Amino acid sequence: MDQNTRRVGTVSRGIRCPIIREGDDLAAIVADSVLEAAEIEGFELRDRDVISITESIVARAQGNYATVNDIAADVKAKLGGETVGVIFPILSRNRFAICLKGIAMGAKKVVLMLSYPSDEVGNELVSLDKLDAAGVNPYSDVLSLEKYRELFGVNLHEFTGVDYVDYYASIIRESGADVEIVFANQAKAILNYTDCVLTCDIHTRARTKRILKAAGAKIVLGLDDILNAPVNGSGCNEKYGLLGSNKSTEDKIKLFPRECKSLVLDIQDKIAKATGKHVEVMVYGDGAFKDPQGKIWELADPVVSPAFTDGLIGTPNELKLKYLADNDFKDLSGDALREAISASIKAKGDNLVGNMASQGTTPRQLTDLIGSLCDLTSGSGDKGTPVVLVQGYFDNYTN
View (spheres, rainbow, N blue to C red):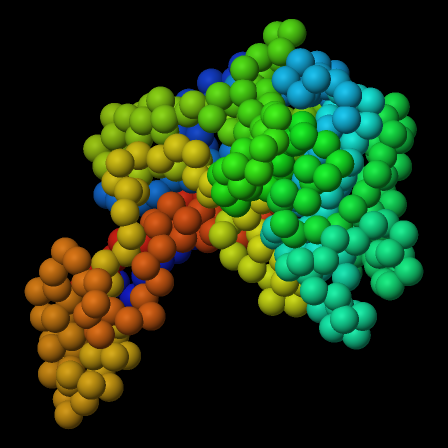
């Protein structure tokens, strides 16, 4: 390689920003923060850099909040306020516990049906080994709370130390509703208890609703149907409702951002005017990856990215360098090998599906891949970098 060849590929930088409050001009703050970081840290923006903004500051700037009373009012109006089946929630103090509080406030009784051995995203209620030892078939067996305790006792979450069965039951009681807890994985099992059902799964919700409606449920709603319009002046999310929400205070939630395509386009335009560069911009929430120890899938949001510029539509179209090196050009080395691989990359087609030289190149959506990188870069704690600048993501060996 000569001296002019770049030695660095993809770089992900967390960008520090001011604390965002409701009503702030987020597009201006994000653009200015990126431009100031580039000047102070001594790097330049390039075409096809990606500026990513965490969904939390977008929702905060939008003022997209609601209270448990707002949730209760919507649940009562839509599900009748009597006995409500609440099925397949994830086990989360941050994500679901406060939603459950509002749901229970809008009902006289909650029949809480938990999937087992784990929830949809992998939080474990009981180990597979314990199921095997007890001879329980999770695909068919419906367990009462008493049977669950008899067979498995108390099971604390590996990371939080919480007994979610007892925790969720106490939330429902403290919210003024009676509670009955069952364990099942067949959605229609809830119809033995009530025909008014709120299904709380995230990525499987369409199938669950279809099954319940076909089985004769009177009312079937998902979390995406609650607060999908304002209640008493609250925030809302027209597309996702309560999905993607987080606890803000003991009685308030921050909802997933509302429509924000205009925001990403505005930031893209501001950068173009300031630098002449065409960057891509996206809003991201949870990454789409799985923890190998706890078996927890990170994606509790309905999507990784609720808004992005058009240059981020699609999937990667890449060749596997090690495949080319070990197969097509196994007899070459040094400059000859580099030139042959470079020629292959330059000549690659627009669609490599089925091409052996592209095997193992992770054909996932660009926004899911970049959003996961950004989620890991920004973290969920005190890094203070709610904006992430990704450079070189669309480079390849020939750049």
